[in-house]
Length: 440
Ligand code: NAD
Image (cartoon, rainbow, N blue to C red; front, side):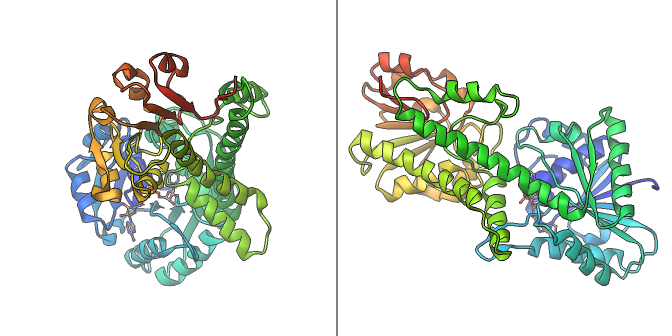
């Protein structure tokens, strides 16, 4: 292809991480978003979310190889545009309104152009969506030569830049052969620039879309599987799910990664995408009991934490309960669908006084929870004279807590297995750890 001029629509997690990565590889990148506050922060070199390395890359590219704007017209010169807006799952199914308005804006900016341009959909969308968006785009843009492809994203929050630079795979599903060829050519050019050679898989658009769901639902299934085994281990004398799952995972067909018990999966992707695939299956009258069980298992994991607190504290009302960790996982300030947020709300509903600590995500948590909980930036103050402490995020900070400062008899509910229950019990602290049998 020609010299690349890149556009990115939607400067959220995926979009901004791509925009800075591509800009720092030497492409000219125009990023467009409708959120002016976000654009202002980006222009000042301040990323709207926490992600290792992004501050520096943004500072080095903004105003130089990376320009951001609220106007789709500024994409007129771009010849390859990535769409990275969100497609939330609602009760009615997948909400495509962000995608449609982003693509309508781009179609107006490109209307009638004769040279070849390509749109790549990074957003996670259900099978068939890319092709139907393509038909709509072609009609609105009136372009004789426009390519379209699904290019799902697999990056992990907390490692976004690293995963973009060195992905496990690149999946490309063009609506036609030329679209796939052009997009593969672009990514080959990028990986040559950054000096890596990841597998590039070219498939049908519907297969590309489906690969993303198969991946996320499988990951959700691993979490629910680990939590199921953990629950059984808890009732089995001398059983620790960490040992059991590690032993099972050593089988190369199973693998040890992503097979740890915890409070259940959260974040902006797994819950949303699991729900979307169930909805899709329902629409097509396809029975998916396995995926429903994955969701149900995730839901009851939270109930289990509440049941432990009820049982050990003899009731939750009036108790002071500290939640350690608001982010859905360590390394990010993202609290979207974090189990901690659900837990905090439920504990409040049951009359507890809830304190919340997180090293990064308190501001985002406050946006969701308002003033119903107390926010603590200091761990010691969060723990002081609490009746119970629930560890919900695997922040390394929680591995080095001086637990001896807790009042004797305090309950620690360790849902990330960051503590050593034996030494805590020696200090007179009661411990309930996910996956760990209490039956000697
Ligand atoms: P996000 O909500 O953080 O970002 C979306 C951005 O799009 C926001 O900045 C919003 O202001 C902007 N936007 C909305 N409508 C717009 C419009 N019409 N024009 C321009 N901008 C608009 O979402 P995200 O977490 O970056 O996820 C984006 C997509 O990528 C989703 O489909 C998600 O499932 C997928 N994905 C996310 C991750 C992740 O870790 N977050 C990983 C892989 C894939």
